[in-house]
Every structure is written in C-alpha cells, then in structure tokens.
Length: 289
Image (cartoon, rainbow, N blue to C red; front, side):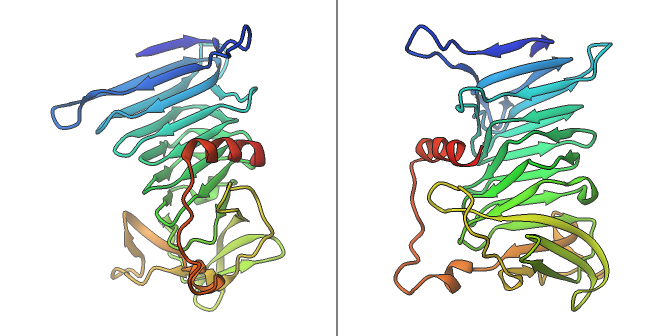
C-alpha cells in the first residue's frame, strides 16, 4: 500500500531530460496470487505523471478519503500535458472513497470501476478500447468525457441520475452502453442539443428516463469533429428478459452504436484505422484538453 496525506507528486522538468513521475503496478500470479495494490490518499493529494496498471488478474485501487479535517480529493493533474493512466487487459483500476478529479487521460483496455459514493470530476478523458470495460456507480461531473476509440468498448452506467459527463464516438460501430436498472423502450438523438434521449415507452413516448451528452470524435486522434450522430446510429438490445429489460451484466437497457462505418464509408474503405498507441495518446491530449 502507498499512503499519502495532502501530498504532491510530480516529475522534474529541469534539468533536461525531463523525468516523469511514474507508478507501475505489475507482477503477481493471476491464478494463485494476483497482485492488488492500494493507493490511499488523504485530504487533497495531487499526482502529475503516469500510472501504469498491468497486474494480470489484479489491479490498483485509488482511495480518496478525509484527513480528519478536509474531504478527500485525489487530483490527477496534467500540467505538462503528459498525464496518462493506462489499464492493461486483464487488469482493473478502481476509484473509491470521496472525490477523484481527473485532469488527464485514462486509457482503459482492461477494467475500470468508479464506485458508489465517488464524485468523479474534472476536465479529463477516459478512453475505452481493445475490449475496455468501465463501470460507473458513482457520480460523474460535467466536462468529464468517455470516448470509445474502437468498436469493442463497454460502458456500464449504474447511476444514470448522477452521470453528467459526455460520450464520444468515432465512425466505428459496436460500442456498447449498459444502462443498468433502466427499462428503456426507445431512444432518440437530438442533433441540436447533441444528446441521446432515453424513453420508457416505444416511439419516443412515455417518461424521459435520462439524457446523455454526445460527441463525434475523429478516428485518427480522437479530437472532436462536426457532430454527425443520428438516432439510427443507436439500437436497443433485442435480448430481453421476462421483465422487458436487457440481460446484459445487470437488469437494464442495453444500447449499442450501430455499424456507422458501414453506412458512412464507401465500399473498399472500411478497413479499421491502426494507430500507434502512444502517438494517439499524445495527440488526444493536445486536441482534447
């Protein structure tokens, strides 16, 4: 366990070459003794650097708690535009406790859990790709963005009322949203307000259960582009249980981004774009923050 009390973690900008602060979680046996590390922060603790989570079958939990006087706030700062967390496949990054302020980039190829009771704030970005799965049980503030870099990401929203962030989609179809606990019967995209509206009855009727802010983003660098999402780009899951709710991870509606690339690109040009991960991360920071 690493414990910090109102501390500041940052690298050295001078003398050159610059030295970045880095925490790496790796090792353990995924079957016999998976490595599960904890970073306990008290009061306002700021971290500016890289956090790499690659313990197969294990992971890292960042817990933000009060120091006895001040509420807990873990600030993932990004002064040099290089603050990145990377969660590798078969690893999990968990945020627990009170406030998490994300001002950097969190790339999720494995799992990421924002537990109930957490206030996840800031102007940062969470990117899902290569099968990344993010589960949100806490509250998410405005300005926090969750981007689907490819067609494999899954976002589970267990606290729809507490979600004020936005979702970013490229032209690739297949991204999935699990609306746990919501019995959604229809949806629509408001191209003027850039939101996905969710309704309790077919045909965009009944109660408006919630609205999610949307963004169109570039495949190349994940930067924001002209909004081109439409209602036809999203489909409700057809696999329903006896109560009418989708059977995907939890009782609730299941929304999937339709194959937009099939509809928007000419034949012969549908090959998925390949990108260097580090280059894309840096470009993402430059274009989006």
